[in-house]
Length: 158
Image (cartoon, rainbow, N blue to C red):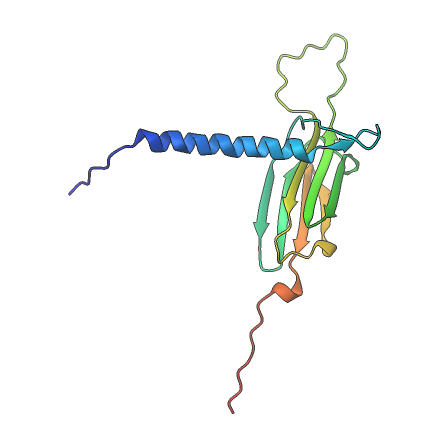
């Protein structure tokens, strides 16, 4: 027996609104995270990040791992900070100089500055964060704190 499901167009609209809201929140968070001091009396100027590298975050029993795609970048062009339980990854990818006689038919890759920031999970140990960079991939290791790991306690017969 087949069950007839009623399609609700409002739910589709609501879904699109949620997707749009997530995108807006992401762009707003990036914009707010890219504040930098201008040196003019301690005031800050907002600058919008021009691109945002792709990130994967995984977890196992020992650590959290943040993998960040940074093609065509060197480790010297990337900055990693941990402050107030927030991991921030920032940097800048510059566009190659235009050469005389060279025509660009399409430029789809993004260039410029970026900032990605993530709140540390409660069980992560921010004092032991480490990172490595190889072949355009940054890997940030966030070890779990020892006190956060569950401990099995043996029950003795009395």
